Image (cartoon, rainbow, N blue to C red; front, side, top):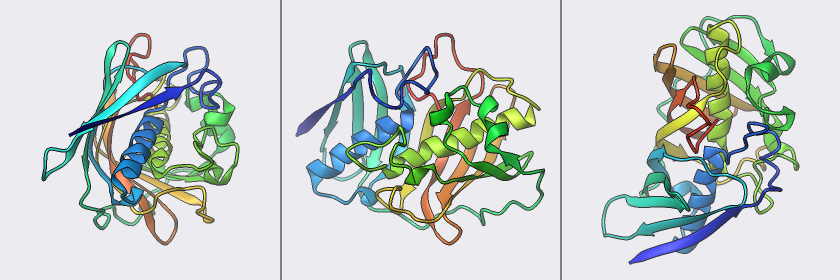
Length: 265
C-alpha cells in the first residue's frame, strides 16, 4: 500500500538566506532528514533503524515549493522512497529498515597532515553565507582525506533544525561541506562555485539526532575516487569515541548551470 506525506520549505526557512545566497535551494541532507522522519513516524520505527542504501538528487527544491514524499510497501526488501515537486521527481531514495550495522570507517585521525585550517579560512571556500558554514575547523587533511571539527550541532539557531531538533541525516551536510573544503584545499583555493551533492549510499545511523550530542563532532572523509570535476568519499561523522552517521557520498565540485541539482552541499 502506498503512503504519502507532504513537506513544505517556506521562504523564511532559516537555511535559505545562507545556503547559496541569491539562489537558495533546500540542502539535500535536510530533504533526507525530513523524509526519514516522516517514514519512521508512519512505520513506528526508531530513526536510527533506517539505512539509506542509495539516494539520488535530480532537481533542486526551492523556497515555498511543496514536496510530496511517497513510498510503497511491497514486502521484503528496501523501500523505494520518491520525492516529487511541481516539475517532477526531485529525489529518490532506497531505504532499508533492517537496522544499522557497525561502521566500516577507519580511525578518524589522519596519518599525514597539513596545517590546521580555521573557520575564518574555511568560510571563503564554501559558497554559503556565514550561518550555513557548519564547520569550526579542519584539524588535518592530505591528498586523500580530511578531518573536520564542528560544534554548531549544539547551536539552537542551527539553520538545519526542524521541529526543535537537528536530525541525524543532517550529518550528511557536515560531511559534504568537509568534502567541498577538501576539494578547494587540494586545488589551493576556492576553484569550484559549489559542491553539488549528487548521491549518497550505504548511510547508517547510530543515533536519531545530533543536537543532544555534547561532544565535538569529528567529520572524517576519505576520497575513494577523485578528479577535477568531483569525487566519491567514504565518510563518518562521530565523536572522539563513537560513530554517529557513516556512509558514502558523491559530490560534483563544478556545480551545473543554475544549480540544477537538489542536493547542493
